[in-house]
Image (cartoon, rainbow over all chains, first blue to last red; front, side, top):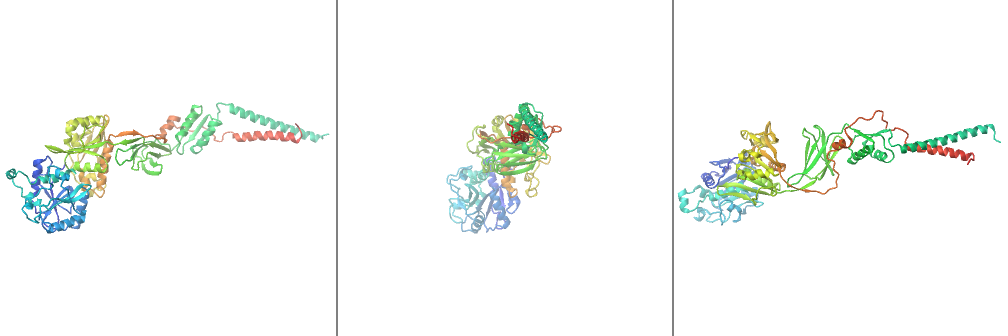
Length: 205
Length: 433
């Protein structure tokens, strides 16, 4: 059985590699709390290549404008229709930012309008329990970016199942700057735990 | 006073009258004898088209000593039984037919929520086998060494199968009740996509997937594994071994198991093994390069079969899927690894084909409830076997047989009437009483 591999999507435009520390931190959380078979390191996969279909979970992030190529659009549509899972995070944490505008336009062009994911969705109980929906990030609470604490995630849903998750919460920054274990013990929480929920949800629904 | 010539004419007329009288009496006696004879010596032959009328004739007016039927088209069970009844009454009934092939068919509902009827046909290799339902022809194939097999998604309840001159009629005798499926394994892409495929097919799926030392992911109410609740168990990896004792008992009592070779290799499931496994052949070809046989792009653990196991699918000379009956249940073992790669990365129809492949595999082992259907439709599943059972093996026609043997009964009666009429008319013309 192939182990789970955290894949970061490479797209032709923008800065897809802006959160390169995020994958190892999510993999660390998965290794710490679950018994999943895991690849020890993540992989970067081009959205316009057939290799995309070897990784049913793909993470997309960035700060810059995103314009998918024709091949990227064709692959992404097919990928999601067949059961692939996209987790997209706005690294700007800014709903007036250029990443947000261009990425949501691209996603809506491919999959239809993004809808609000209810905070009682099974996603928030797929491994750890998040009673209030998506956990807030320090960037939101510090008033950076758009100075909004986003209460919901958005996504593309089909028959109640989430195919694409779109976040304005800047998990890219929050999870990249995961504190060390002693700091987490002091704060009493691990901010990357929600990453385990995303992966477990993708693997089981 | 009559002249000498009158006397000569009168003598000839009397002789003619006597001849007519004698002939009429002779025919009457002949008909009487014929009607009283219990074992006439005549033999008759006919083809199937003329058999209906002949059977009526043989059964109502005269029964020949022997009847011989040339089977050139389908012979109905009623006709076979009728011939057998004649044979039981003393008439030797024989048959021949170059196109009469050993043929048998059976139709069963498929253990699948989308329905369908599976038809298996026993026929000589190379014979053209044609399947039809009441609306017309559905399909035709050339029989292989193991006969022919059809899948009718329209789910006909009665089918006709023709091979050579005979037609087999099979009836779906049961309707099915489908319990749930249980998927056991580790949280991963295989468990996700296999469960999704089976649910898309319409199965109700329970799942218990190992996720962490503290807990599993559960779907549905995981009950004790028994045939009342589950049609089949799908064990994807060694995490299913926690249920090994239950799975072994379940299969022995009639349950179905679909499993990977990795799970079957565990000692706890040794009783269910289909064979031994070899070293894994890593995935090689891309899906694009093998569009017609996409499973060639998957990694494979080849299976070496036990004596009582059968191959279900090959890759070249290697066994990729095998099956075995274990007491009342069935086990199918899959040598392929990570079939989800086919669904995600295969050709345009990969999702449908992946789903259908898994559904077929589950249907081949599933334990289902059966409810007998009430039906009055005729069944004739093995026409040649029935023919031989009723009339014996084929035999050559009797030597010198003439289907037009003897004078027809209507001609005999006509001659009898003509002779009487001749005598009566002659007597009336000469004024005799």
